[in-house]
Structures are given as structure tokens and as C-alpha cells.
Image 1 (cartoon, rainbow, N blue to C red):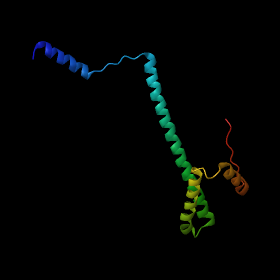
Image 2: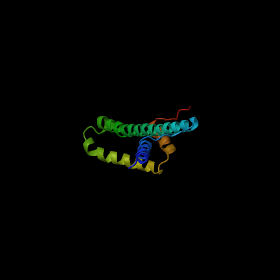
Image 3: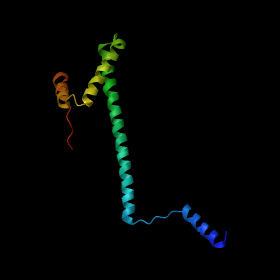
Image 4: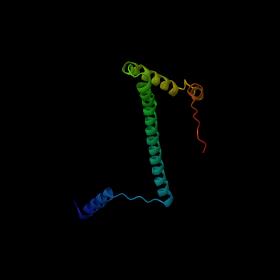
Length: 121
């Protein structure tokens, strides 16, 4: 192997090890913006999933606690699985769009005396 060939091989190895990109400020800003947007979407998704999990925990555990302590004090071990199953069935119906949120809200007011209204910005 001659000197020129060794020099050419060394130059090619150096090129392979180090890659250089030339970007305009706008291209660089766009790349940074895209990464930030992706991270924001991921963080929002995580926050939403955590909120849904918390809501589901409360949806199931608070009524259970009331039933156990105030209504089914002796029979709750036998009755709880059926109750939870019905709650989950209704939740699945809601997810499929089979239950109307406005009807549920109206029933809560009519039979439970509780009115939940959405906050205005």
C-alpha cells in the first residue's frame, strides 16, 4: 500500500468517524420546536392518563367505602363484587357511547340532589 493510498484511507476513516451537518438557524429552530412539541404531547398524555386513573380509583373506592361503612356493614364482602361489576359495566357502556352524559348529569341532580356543572374559563 502506497503513501497516497494510506493517506486516502486515513482521510476516509476520519470522515466516517465525524459527521458534520450545516443547518440554518431556521432549520435548527424547527428541529428544536418539533422535539419540544413531541415532548409536550407525551407529557399531556401522561397527565391525562394519571388523571383518568385517579378518577377511576375515586369512582370505585368512594362509593365502596360509603356502602361498606353505612349501608352494607355486615354483607359487604358478599355484595361488593357484584356492585363493582355493575359499575364497570356502566363505565364500559359510557366508553362505547351508549350512555348520555347529560342524562347521567340530570339523574344525579334529580335523584341524588347533586349538580355538577362545568367551570367557565
